[in-house]
Amino acid sequence: MNFPLYIAKRYLRSKSSNNAINFITIIAVVGVILGSASLFIVLSGFSGLKDFTLKFSSIIDPDLKAETAKGKSFLLTDADISKLNQLSDIAQYSKIVEERVIVASQEKNTIATLKGVDERFEKVVNFDTVIEHGHWIDPNSRQIIVGWGIANTLSLGVLDFTNPINIYVPKPGKGQITSTKNAFNSVKVVNKGVFFINEKLNDTYVFGPIELAQNLLNYEPNQINAIEFKLKEGVDEALAKEHIQAILGDKVVLKNRAQLNDALYKMLNTENLVVYLIFTLVLIIAFFNVIGSLIMMMLDKKRSLNTLFNIGVTIKDIRRIFFYQGSLMSIVGGFIGLLISLIIVFLQKTFSLVMITPSLAYPVNIKIENLFIVFVTISVLGIIASKIASVRVTKSLVEGR
Image (cartoon, rainbow, N blue to C red):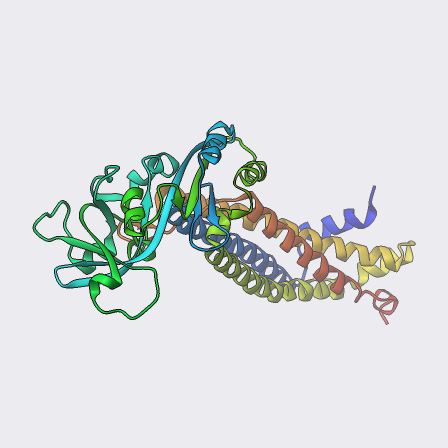
């Protein structure tokens, strides 16, 4: 039997004759419990916010996107299309023509991004879920669908034929501009719907048929800016990228969802790391109570330690007693804290106890990695604190000198 561990368990369960020491020990344990519970609740909250934010941005993000490597566009040949159609990794793909344009209506105008898509686009991304008013565009038409922000800026209605909408794009070329007609290509369109995703996307995107975008930009029928892919369930993404890259060659660069939202992912991960470090600092301060509690326990148990020393227990083993006691205190406190925080997060997830708006509950998400991170953090800090306290056991202390 491990003698130091046995004594450590006895010390942990037993009360001291000194009420002040009992009080300090309780404070130390409560500090560990609250610290671990707070850390897990905050990490769960940030996980929920991250998933909530990415859920909206990923609505119009495909599994993979092939963007032109050089210039603004590339040619997709019939041979490329035939090979892509035969590729078993792909469930669907959509050809894209994307360009910054000016949208004008009723003497109002705004800069937007026109995204021309083909008839397969709805099978690549689930866009129907974000259309607030109206319906999706028809292929080979002069219809568009705009974001909520653009609709408000231009006061656009749905299928309002009395107020025409004009889309302008600068003509390529050099030389002096002598008139507006020479400077811009333009097309009259009708708005068929309004979508709502998030503020940035609502203020940025206008969707239209790919043929409309190609005509506006003077593109060839097989000239596009990008291809968006939806992969089949269970397909290895890295392997699919290799197969697509082999077909399209070096004229495109393939990106997954994380790479398409590179800045957003970095921001969310940085915020998560900063919050973790701040709460870890709070935990470090809390563990000073554990160190103080162990030192007070050593002073209180001087007679018992002297007895143990006289019957042959070494100084090393006595140090191990308090090392085990502090470690157990930390691990047990961390486990209780995690259990309490799991209940709180579960209640928030189930019953929406805290609301951001009257209709939107604060998002939380229980993740195994967060449980692991909190438990490891508590354990490591507890072991370090216990080691710092246990080295205070000296021969002069146990001999009562």
